[in-house]
Length: 102
Image (cartoon, rainbow, N blue to C red):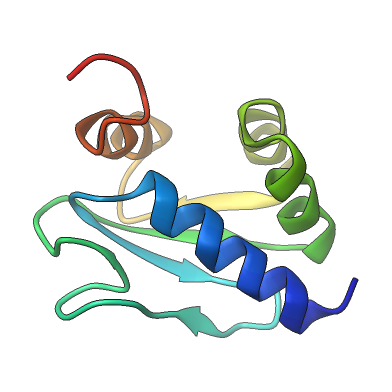
C-alpha cells in the first residue's frame, strides 16, 4: 500500500474519531494532515494535540483495527503524542463521543 493511500486512510479514520478538540496529525513522510478551520481535525477547541506517526505500517494497522493497534503503536514508539499525554488524547476521543460515555 502506498504512502498516499495510507495517508488517505489515516485522514478518514481520524476525522471519524475526532469531532471536538483540536488534533494535528503528522504522517511518516512529515506531512501534516489538515482539515477544517482552526485545526486540522475537530472543532478547534482545546486541547490541541499533535499525533505523530513514525511508520506507514502503523497507519495501515490502525485502518484495520484501531482499538488494538493504537495502544500497541504508542507503546512501541510508532505513535507519539506531542503537546499532551496519552491521557489527553484519550480524553479528546472521549469528548468526541468515540471513547466511551460523555
